[in-house]
Length: 363
View 1 (cartoon, rainbow, N blue to C red):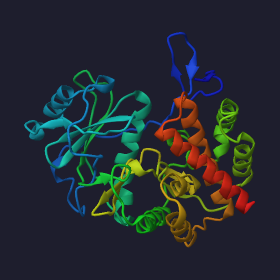
View 2 (view 1 turned 30 degrees about the horizontal axis):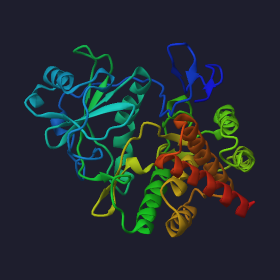
View 3 (view 1 turned 135 degrees about the vertical axis):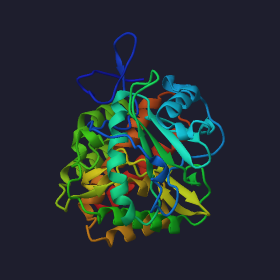
């Protein structure tokens, strides 16, 4: 595993016992804000088309990660939302890295940050998801209540509605082109939402929505680490083109993590989009990465054509920056994993190959 210093990667590190650092896959770091608890969360669903936050499967998952377990969740609910104290609490089968998620009864989830760096996403989602929801074509997570630190747990947390569905990376999507069109429709709707008062790209979005140049040092470190494993010269050309492609388009809303794990599927179609922790206002090129991470061939062409028809104008420069974002993430994953290439590494290598080939065709 290649080593790096804190000076090289101040926002992406995992301190080891010997005080050396290893590159790890990071999710987000959000600027903290203030939020208030809901005193009457039972009525928070009023006006929503359906209950709205789901995770990947209904079956019980592993408990206890990051010092958070079902017993803690039960104590928090009993103390702060006593009307729900008798509901069963179970960990979901697959939750994200930044938060632990528990099923609360049949219709709710409890979402708890695993570290201080992930706390502000809870606050940001609580404020902005309800504002965006009426203008989006699919469901997004409704916030039913905001909890405060207590019972030995030191962070704010939230109660959300449950939405039936399976994440796209766990589901079978037969018509991937239709799915690509639905994702494009969601992105165009999000980009059309009012940006008044919304947070501009920056630390709160982990610099999604900003220039990919923020990760220049990290990307070049990864390229050096991967010499002999990929065509680093060709990959460097993709990265250089991304940095050279200045953003001249209007700043719009972006989601920041449009990945298969955050796209819910019901009856073979896109039914909801979750995890808005890295959302903000800026350059939406980062949201186009799904073109390579999930789509290929016809479905990728359908996605590209659909988003190019939007009012924002996904031009060649935006696609060049998107290729840069996709390359950065794939390279980082390859460096993190190390050792023999497995299934996930095969996918990352495919992404690198695809963005390199597309760059060559469009150069």
